[in-house]
Length: 396
Image (spheres, rainbow, N blue to C red):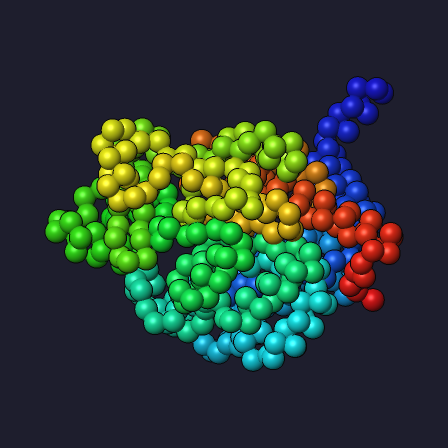
């Protein structure tokens, strides 16, 4: 009888685990927080650029107006409709006073992507990886007004890759840099496996053209490697074995970041990143490291590209963070957000040595980091509200 019970338990285990995982999520208390997600890069219905953030908000039961954040509607930016139609929602047409009112009604803002939407991808051109004219994107002057107001009132600000880059104007970029005490070098990069354009169709056509124009030779790369491109059109390619000793960028986290945000000491990062310098008012929580051989080291040096640069930046005195990568864009299954404890057994379902897979980065880096930032901030808001020191805006 005992053996039969054990066998039945084992047979029903695949059903019991998800059931209890959902029930545990369901009984958790909701956390009211007025959150603004800003995503200007939504050419498709999937909303990939802020899906990871939505997953964390749902999983941790952060609510807005007593409803869980909805992937397709709870954000500002670009909204795709049917038949090549779209609408945009932002602060560009508001007065300064109206922007102040909007900021005062919020608890936090997260700029997930400001790159925008362009004609080739929007109208389904076969040249989707080629540069084309902009339909929408880039910071507006009122975004700076919003951010300054949020900073002045102690609200939480998070921003990431492409926040400072094109198509935002240089004037507004400078204002944003001063506000965050960072300086963009003009360089962005990305890991590709392989760099062979016949095999890997993700490599942009514009990158191949830039390379041919700059070096007067054909693109002839076949191994994994890293592409760097500057806003002035310069391009640098590092290839495994030729100029790289490690094919993918690594992120190393300080002891402080490991303890406060639950981050791993090291992890690979296989997607877009930007190279910034950080000022004295900030703390560098994590850093990138590019492993090169002597040839690669010289190539980086000749182009003014560092091999170590910030990954996660936090301000020492204010509630704002900058993530120097496209961290919110991960191929996560949004429906799994309503299950607790997935982080404890997700590692059995992916290959950590498959560098192009961004799933490990989500589970081991992005999810714990954002979860801890939000939980710490939410606790701080509750304590301040309880003490009567500040008025905290919460949904009715």
